[in-house]
Length: 135
Image (cartoon, one colour):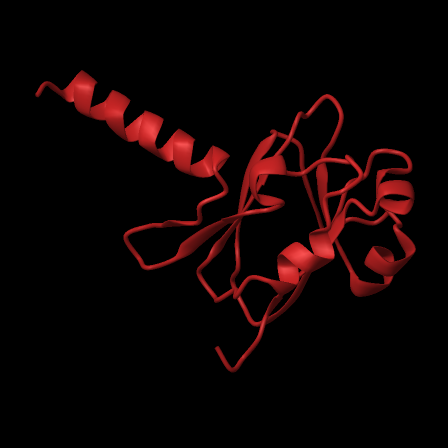
């Protein structure tokens, strides 16, 4: 099989797995967690990011993957206080590609919100990802 066919098979397999909400493992045994599973990062009512985060187990080295339409959303990493207040004015980091991969580098909480007006406050488009020390 030529290289182009192999690349196409890998691409379509990974795309299918990501769309299906399957967590992927890379060569370093890290897991890629797609935020919101099939729905991705969205302001749609019915996506429960609190439940999504609580259902996962996150480790140092894992990747948090945000997939969204950059014309309607972004991802802001914020402090605990800004997360609870839905304050987008002082982000720690800003992501806006629509395909953002963020590596968990240490134990603790990682707080993310959508910085578009009212997405955090009205639709709860925010997620608290915890990488505990005991895992």
